[in-house]
Image (tube, rainbow, N blue to C red; front, side, top):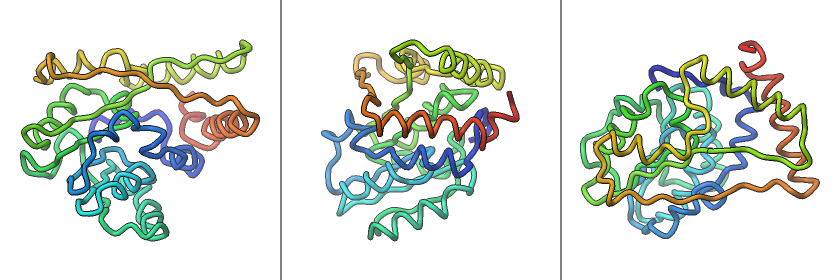
Length: 227
Protein backbone atom coordinates (compact mmCIF):
# COMPACT_ATOMS: atom_id res chain seq x y z
CA UNK A 1 0.00 0.00 0.00
CA UNK A 2 1.50 3.33 -0.95
CA UNK A 3 0.71 6.08 1.51
CA UNK A 4 1.04 3.34 4.12
CA UNK A 5 -0.07 4.51 7.55
CA UNK A 6 -0.03 1.10 9.24
CA UNK A 7 0.59 1.85 12.92
CA UNK A 8 2.15 -1.50 13.87
CA UNK A 9 4.15 -3.69 11.48
CA UNK A 10 4.37 -7.33 10.43
CA UNK A 11 6.20 -8.53 13.53
CA UNK A 12 5.67 -12.11 14.66
CA UNK A 13 3.22 -11.01 17.38
CA UNK A 14 1.07 -9.13 14.86
CA UNK A 15 1.06 -12.04 12.42
CA UNK A 16 0.12 -14.51 15.17
CA UNK A 17 -2.93 -12.38 15.93
CA UNK A 18 -3.90 -12.20 12.27
CA UNK A 19 -3.45 -15.94 11.71
CA UNK A 20 -6.43 -16.56 13.98
CA UNK A 21 -8.61 -14.94 11.32
CA UNK A 22 -10.35 -17.13 8.76
CA UNK A 23 -13.07 -16.60 6.19
CA UNK A 24 -15.46 -18.26 8.63
CA UNK A 25 -14.83 -15.93 11.57
CA UNK A 26 -13.90 -12.78 9.65
CA UNK A 27 -15.83 -12.82 6.36
CA UNK A 28 -18.98 -14.75 7.17
CA UNK A 29 -21.13 -12.17 5.40
CA UNK A 30 -19.38 -13.04 2.13
CA UNK A 31 -19.53 -16.83 2.25
CA UNK A 32 -23.04 -17.25 0.77
CA UNK A 33 -21.86 -15.51 -2.41
CA UNK A 34 -18.77 -17.64 -3.03
CA UNK A 35 -19.05 -20.20 -5.84
CA UNK A 36 -16.58 -23.04 -6.57
CA UNK A 37 -15.15 -21.60 -9.80
CA UNK A 38 -14.67 -18.01 -8.67
CA UNK A 39 -11.49 -15.96 -8.96
CA UNK A 40 -10.87 -13.98 -5.76
CA UNK A 41 -8.41 -11.21 -4.87
CA UNK A 42 -7.63 -10.78 -1.16
CA UNK A 43 -5.86 -7.46 -0.53
CA UNK A 44 -3.88 -7.01 2.67
CA UNK A 45 -3.68 -10.77 3.10
CA UNK A 46 -1.06 -10.76 5.87
CA UNK A 47 -0.29 -14.35 6.94
CA UNK A 48 -2.79 -15.70 4.41
CA UNK A 49 -5.22 -17.45 6.76
CA UNK A 50 -8.34 -15.79 5.30
CA UNK A 51 -6.93 -16.10 1.77
CA UNK A 52 -6.32 -19.83 2.13
CA UNK A 53 -9.78 -20.37 3.58
CA UNK A 54 -11.22 -18.63 0.50
CA UNK A 55 -9.14 -20.92 -1.73
CA UNK A 56 -10.59 -24.02 -0.05
CA UNK A 57 -14.04 -22.76 -0.99
CA UNK A 58 -13.24 -22.31 -4.70
CA UNK A 59 -11.76 -25.72 -5.63
CA UNK A 60 -12.13 -25.07 -9.36
CA UNK A 61 -11.24 -21.38 -9.04
CA UNK A 62 -8.23 -19.47 -7.79
CA UNK A 63 -7.25 -16.90 -5.17
CA UNK A 64 -4.50 -14.28 -5.13
CA UNK A 65 -3.40 -12.71 -1.85
CA UNK A 66 -1.46 -9.44 -1.96
CA UNK A 67 0.43 -7.34 0.57
CA UNK A 68 2.20 -4.00 0.21
CA UNK A 69 5.42 -5.57 1.56
CA UNK A 70 6.86 -9.06 1.18
CA UNK A 71 7.49 -9.66 4.90
CA UNK A 72 4.48 -11.92 5.67
CA UNK A 73 4.25 -13.70 2.33
CA UNK A 74 6.75 -16.50 2.89
CA UNK A 75 4.72 -17.49 5.95
CA UNK A 76 1.52 -17.36 3.90
CA UNK A 77 3.03 -19.64 1.24
CA UNK A 78 4.24 -22.03 3.93
CA UNK A 79 0.76 -22.14 5.48
CA UNK A 80 -0.81 -22.92 2.09
CA UNK A 81 1.68 -25.74 1.54
CA UNK A 82 1.10 -27.06 5.05
CA UNK A 83 -2.65 -27.19 4.44
CA UNK A 84 -2.29 -28.66 0.96
CA UNK A 85 -3.94 -25.71 -0.80
CA UNK A 86 -2.60 -25.30 -4.33
CA UNK A 87 -4.99 -22.84 -5.97
CA UNK A 88 -3.64 -19.80 -4.11
CA UNK A 89 -0.70 -17.50 -4.84
CA UNK A 90 0.79 -14.54 -3.00
CA UNK A 91 2.53 -11.41 -4.25
CA UNK A 92 3.28 -7.81 -3.38
CA UNK A 93 0.96 -5.13 -4.75
CA UNK A 94 -0.18 -1.58 -4.03
CA UNK A 95 -3.90 -1.27 -3.35
CA UNK A 96 -3.86 2.18 -4.98
CA UNK A 97 -2.43 0.79 -8.24
CA UNK A 98 -3.15 -2.91 -8.58
CA UNK A 99 -1.17 -4.86 -11.22
CA UNK A 100 -4.25 -6.52 -12.68
CA UNK A 101 -6.42 -5.87 -15.71
CA UNK A 102 -9.89 -4.39 -15.50
CA UNK A 103 -12.70 -6.89 -14.83
CA UNK A 104 -10.36 -9.60 -13.53
CA UNK A 105 -11.96 -10.94 -10.33
CA UNK A 106 -15.35 -12.21 -9.21
CA UNK A 107 -14.64 -10.99 -5.66
CA UNK A 108 -12.20 -8.33 -4.45
CA UNK A 109 -11.88 -8.45 -0.67
CA UNK A 110 -10.28 -6.45 2.13
CA UNK A 111 -10.43 -7.10 5.85
CA UNK A 112 -9.25 -4.42 8.29
CA UNK A 113 -7.27 -2.69 5.53
CA UNK A 114 -9.02 0.56 4.61
CA UNK A 115 -8.41 2.00 8.07
CA UNK A 116 -4.66 1.64 7.54
CA UNK A 117 -4.34 3.66 4.33
CA UNK A 118 -4.47 7.39 3.75
CA UNK A 119 -6.88 7.34 0.79
CA UNK A 120 -9.55 4.64 1.18
CA UNK A 121 -11.67 6.16 -1.59
CA UNK A 122 -8.86 5.74 -4.10
CA UNK A 123 -8.36 2.19 -2.86
CA UNK A 124 -12.03 1.33 -3.33
CA UNK A 125 -11.97 2.87 -6.80
CA UNK A 126 -9.10 0.59 -7.74
CA UNK A 127 -10.82 -2.43 -6.20
CA UNK A 128 -13.88 -1.60 -8.29
CA UNK A 129 -11.75 -1.40 -11.44
CA UNK A 130 -10.35 -4.92 -11.12
CA UNK A 131 -13.70 -6.49 -10.14
CA UNK A 132 -15.74 -8.06 -12.93
CA UNK A 133 -18.98 -6.50 -14.07
CA UNK A 134 -21.54 -7.94 -11.66
CA UNK A 135 -18.77 -9.00 -9.28
CA UNK A 136 -18.41 -8.18 -5.59
CA UNK A 137 -16.19 -5.66 -3.81
CA UNK A 138 -16.21 -6.61 -0.13
CA UNK A 139 -14.84 -4.70 2.87
CA UNK A 140 -15.05 -5.35 6.60
CA UNK A 141 -13.65 -2.81 9.08
CA UNK A 142 -13.92 -2.43 12.84
CA UNK A 143 -16.25 0.21 14.26
CA UNK A 144 -16.02 -0.02 18.04
CA UNK A 145 -14.42 -2.00 20.85
CA UNK A 146 -16.00 -2.46 24.25
CA UNK A 147 -15.31 -4.48 27.39
CA UNK A 148 -16.92 -5.30 30.70
CA UNK A 149 -16.08 -4.71 33.46
CA UNK A 150 -14.53 -1.33 32.64
CA UNK A 151 -10.74 -1.27 32.42
CA UNK A 152 -8.63 1.86 32.75
CA UNK A 153 -5.70 0.04 31.16
CA UNK A 154 -7.68 -1.04 28.10
CA UNK A 155 -9.20 2.43 27.77
CA UNK A 156 -5.69 3.92 27.69
CA UNK A 157 -4.56 1.29 25.17
CA UNK A 158 -7.48 2.09 22.86
CA UNK A 159 -6.93 5.83 23.15
CA UNK A 160 -3.24 5.40 22.35
CA UNK A 161 -3.79 3.22 19.29
CA UNK A 162 -6.47 5.54 17.90
CA UNK A 163 -4.33 8.66 18.40
CA UNK A 164 -1.30 7.09 16.74
CA UNK A 165 -3.38 5.89 13.79
CA UNK A 166 -4.88 9.35 13.27
CA UNK A 167 -1.53 11.09 13.59
CA UNK A 168 -0.17 8.82 10.85
CA UNK A 169 -3.09 9.73 8.58
CA UNK A 170 -5.17 6.61 9.10
CA UNK A 171 -8.88 6.20 9.71
CA UNK A 172 -9.23 4.04 12.83
CA UNK A 173 -12.43 2.02 13.32
CA UNK A 174 -14.25 3.31 10.21
CA UNK A 175 -16.88 0.59 9.84
CA UNK A 176 -19.82 2.99 9.73
CA UNK A 177 -18.18 5.01 6.94
CA UNK A 178 -17.42 2.29 4.41
CA UNK A 179 -20.64 2.83 2.45
CA UNK A 180 -19.92 6.58 2.22
CA UNK A 181 -16.43 5.92 0.89
CA UNK A 182 -17.93 3.44 -1.57
CA UNK A 183 -20.39 6.06 -2.82
CA UNK A 184 -17.54 8.52 -3.29
CA UNK A 185 -15.60 5.82 -5.16
CA UNK A 186 -18.39 5.56 -7.73
CA UNK A 187 -20.43 2.63 -6.44
CA UNK A 188 -24.19 2.66 -6.92
CA UNK A 189 -25.73 3.38 -3.51
CA UNK A 190 -28.77 1.25 -4.33
CA UNK A 191 -26.53 -1.80 -4.78
CA UNK A 192 -24.40 -1.33 -1.67
CA UNK A 193 -25.24 -3.87 1.03
CA UNK A 194 -24.46 -3.06 4.65
CA UNK A 195 -24.21 -5.47 7.56
CA UNK A 196 -22.69 -5.77 11.01
CA UNK A 197 -21.13 -8.58 13.00
CA UNK A 198 -19.03 -8.97 16.12
CA UNK A 199 -16.16 -10.87 17.61
CA UNK A 200 -16.77 -11.80 21.25
CA UNK A 201 -13.86 -12.94 23.41
CA UNK A 202 -15.59 -14.22 26.53
CA UNK A 203 -14.11 -17.51 27.70
CA UNK A 204 -10.91 -17.52 29.79
CA UNK A 205 -9.00 -18.91 26.80
CA UNK A 206 -10.40 -16.28 24.43
CA UNK A 207 -9.66 -13.45 26.85
CA UNK A 208 -6.12 -14.72 27.32
CA UNK A 209 -5.66 -14.92 23.55
CA UNK A 210 -6.94 -11.42 22.84
CA UNK A 211 -5.40 -9.65 25.81
CA UNK A 212 -2.09 -11.46 25.46
CA UNK A 213 -1.85 -10.84 21.74
CA UNK A 214 -2.66 -7.15 22.06
CA UNK A 215 -0.07 -6.79 24.81
CA UNK A 216 2.56 -8.50 22.65
CA UNK A 217 1.72 -6.22 19.74
CA UNK A 218 2.29 -3.11 21.83
CA UNK A 219 5.66 -4.35 23.09
CA UNK A 220 7.03 -6.16 20.07
CA UNK A 221 5.70 -4.23 17.06
CA UNK A 222 6.37 -0.71 15.86
CA UNK A 223 3.51 0.62 17.97
CA UNK A 224 5.60 1.01 21.13
CA UNK A 225 8.26 2.99 19.26
CA UNK A 226 5.66 5.29 17.74
CA UNK A 227 4.09 5.88 21.15
